[in-house]
Length: 288
Image (cartoon, rainbow, N blue to C red; front, side, top):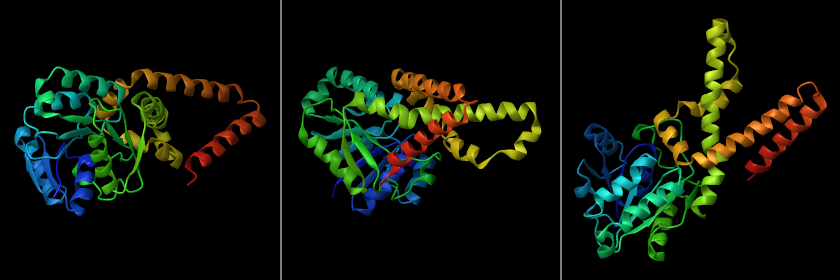
């Protein structure tokens, strides 16, 4: 039986636990809140749980850190003395470059990682929801979803193979990509959309504040465009900050496109051409 420890049993970690338990893996949940961990066990996302990180990871073949991005490296530093020899540590962070650099620094400064040949493999499942917590977890969240595996910070094909194999058990499809390319792409496809959703929500709120009657005519398009603004603001602030350079570039590119649209507002033909290109682009991107 493969044994996995999941640090942070929320939507992402809980969904992973549900999927792997269904495949016969033993899942230990690690966290700080016993009440939430007990809920994870009740929902069958974990077999057992503990608030003691050392106890939680000691028997694990794979440790998956599903915390906010700024806590990934600190947790690795904390658990290194307790993981077993040749354990594989991986993450589920949405920003990869800075996380990998921070983890590299931890591993290079630790004699324990050298003695135990601990491997770290960066990963990012491209699935989620605006909801949070283990109550939102789904056993099929990762089915047919892409999981990016980025450059590792320790040599060893075994570590990569184990992490890829774990995610394949959930029904996910593996995509190998270096961290810089990953961060550049997700800045436009994931991080920027969240920033835009928050910004649009603020814009509509200003309109309602000026005229309370505006609340009665909020369109379906507003709800569609701002659904992800219900995501945890603290988590997304950290993610965008960790990928600030690429998110900044994506914002500049979006502003450029919006300026083109603004400049065409009195030219319906040109405006329709721009909108048509956008429509075709979306269909092309989402075509199966």
